[in-house]
Length: 132
Image (tube, helix red, strand yellow):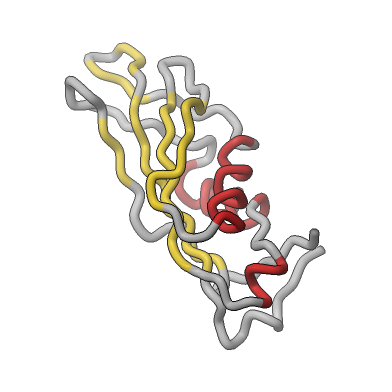
């Protein structure tokens, strides 16, 4: 399966939300290098399935996961499904994700629940930028 890369085709950084079950977090978890690094990492590591692209399958998959108090990404699940091909592509990306800097409350690392959208879309310029 080929990796398809295009900023117009795959837009990740729309909405990104944090939540914690019982208390508010003072410092949110941080992907190594920050938001720009996360966006770059997602673009480089997400595969838009060729069959989904060819068949015009697009939409926003939302993956929910926990960044635990050591920064490990765990308990990922699809909370907004679009199509099995896109759902699996987004989940596979999360499963490869490196550790984050954990969130903190009162200076103590805490587990934080994160919702991360994966926006898969077919753009009119999508055939201009491809990566293998």
